[in-house]
Length: 256
Length: 256
DNA sequence: CATTGTGAACCGGTTCACAGCA
DNA sequence: TGCTGTGAACCGGTTCACAATG
Image (cartoon, rainbow over all chains, first blue to last red; front, side):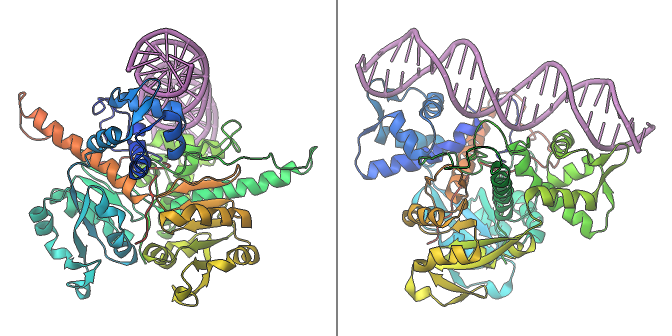
């Protein structure tokens, strides 16, 4: 999931590699912070450090968007914020529905960063009738029976699934039938969707399991490294900002 | 991150590619379901479908673990569950701390799939004194002042950060100093860690932004495709199970 | 002359296609 | 005969290194 995706394998959108797309939000976040500090320009080196990537990668990424930098100087922060926002489609705002208002669904509904940039929680949907009408994050929960109507009247094309695993595929089918074409899935389930629908998944337990794998390996190495020669200091390490997590690639959180 | 990771780039652990490691939990989940239905064996084709990958990839993945299949027959479900669990380090259980008990932290604490496989919530930690002592998911919240003691007495090596972005790096530093070597970061922040510490990140807003990008592209294509010839049915699509989301690769959810 | 933009080498991972084996 | 295991081709993405340039 790493990083996997869901697109036509051949002709890529407008030449922007998927890996680059996955990093644009990271650059945007760093640039927004600079913008708030009224920094006028950044070099690829500075920005790369802030975003946690190396500068060559960043420059190559930006080269896919066009030549927005100035040699000898760097990039204009405001201009770049605008270009990336536009490229990501954040100049319009996207109504989003969240289906499954358990602990996680409620947490997401309350998530501040939602509204800030291009997204708006248009509706909260739950199958439990006793939830209907309750306010969560200032929004009244609606019943799943009305899912199709809600999608339609709000013009929703992005859905977030935070239901238990067992309900996810069914909810997904209804979302897609109602016109949703992008789904963010937090349920621990592999969703089957028609061509043209994008699915990304976020899976807590998978992330933890990947960490456990490496954790175990570290423990094993520690034992194995004792015997050889110098059992001294463990390779003095300065701070780094390595690539962090999936890109794609990868985990689902299931509400209780 | 897809997937990106945080490891020495050269000598890979025990020859198991990172991309394979990221898929093992997926296979394990599918196998566990089969096991519960008492299915004795599966072919690579069946299991691949259940896990949402293609069979060649699955076979290659398994080949890194060893030759656990039987030609002409398939794989023994129970045996494979055991081998993958062992490989992922899930035969022992990992005490985990969650730092930042807001909406999201509470949601994760309540997440059932936690305890089920190898993980145990050893402690909940929050900086807000008014939270101290409160029960969340049956566990008393402890104050961040005691972080080091908690890590130490519980032998914790995996930490989950669900604090606001501003506190994440600081919490991370303390976790690492106290001995944590694997971190799952839900805060929208790039964490800097010393060599040898693994960080994976889960970022809601990044995931949504990636979806928005593709959503926008679809809309643009629709317009562009109208002009040509046949504006008929949109390429009849049978259900697929594509790769879904990051693997690696990559978003952070920030509690309110 | 500092910094971008990019061709070319490199590398991990995926897919293909078939040999090997129960 | 059917399915696994894997070498080889392929491909997207990363890194290198330097030419281009404001």
